[in-house]
Length: 189
Ligand SMILES: [Fe+2]
Ligand SMILES: [Fe+2]
Image 1 (cartoon, rainbow, N blue to C red):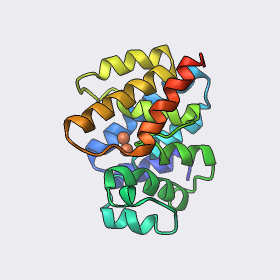
Image 2 (cartoon, rainbow, N blue to C red):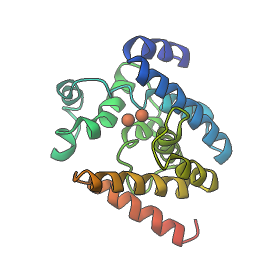
Image 3 (cartoon, rainbow, N blue to C red):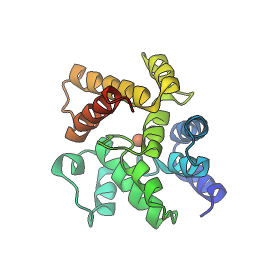
Image 4 (cartoon, rainbow, N blue to C red):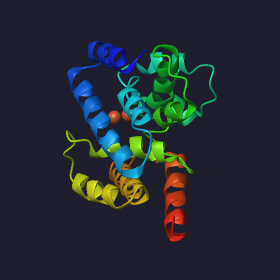
């Protein structure tokens, strides 16, 4: 499907709130891609589809990912699993074949070590899109304007703090991803 057809399909399948968020992520992702010299069309497609699996039931997500290796913690939690399920849907329903676009959809919630620039852009755009108004969002927006790594670090920090405050477990790749960003920032790249 081309971008227009994907957008039309999502407008019919997602709730109004999720679709509005999705369009906000597209706008933010394109802006970041422009600033940081990443392919804007890839950013557009990944942003458009990043939450395409989010509103499925946990059972439907699990069906989609049944042939893909996935740890128990992620498999049992739709908040974690919707990235992987969304990646499968992006491939099977929307015909996305570019590996780096699919990967950005897969990791947008958890992060991971060694994220590509496109991965970081989708991860960040999801936090800072214009409809977001949680406390601390402006700090992440400012960090994102300094560098992708500063922005992603601010995003990790906010998520980890939130999980701690709520007494929830922290997915291990999120911690490894944050450590990796810190290492890169200390290394000066
Ligand atoms: Fe998401
Ligand atoms: Fe999202």
